Image (cartoon, rainbow, N blue to C red):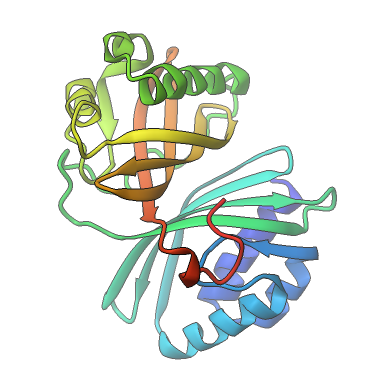
Length: 255
């Protein structure tokens, strides 16, 4: 585990969940902290201005990091949050950029309500949790990059079987099980257009993309997390957040 990954884990578990907000953010961030979670202002003070009241409002904070991995200076984590004995339940996916010492310099995220009932019947945050670091990262990233380009952006669903396993395990709330369920969703108006791939990162068999899609007249920031096995996407999680009007942002925006 690299220092950047350690620092992300510390901010989540010791800081937000444990309540040691100020010490953790001062210890784990670098010479700048550029923020893309639109409700939070830039810098350490922006982080504290948001999270210190958050801790006071939510005395019971169950936060579980479900998946976490790193790719050079990049760290990704996906977490489940239950606040005040389940009064609110959230799923977050976060991406961090770190300096050579592993200190956090920049942060992106999407936050969505946890859904107990998904179209596939799979748990939204369930499934494989450990990265298979013996898998070839570049091979996994190539599969996901070409899937994103040829299927998501170019819309060539005739190639879906080249990239996706027939028995795909689906965790995204609105998408039904298997390759057929994914094909039906991709062909629907609900999927819309995948307009921009902002970043792709991975480790071993796990790869995540962060980008923007447009559907139903809305711009949506979306993380797609994939597990690749035998050269095809075998498992999929998705977490997304509508991008609000510019005047509602507390910083430079989701990207």
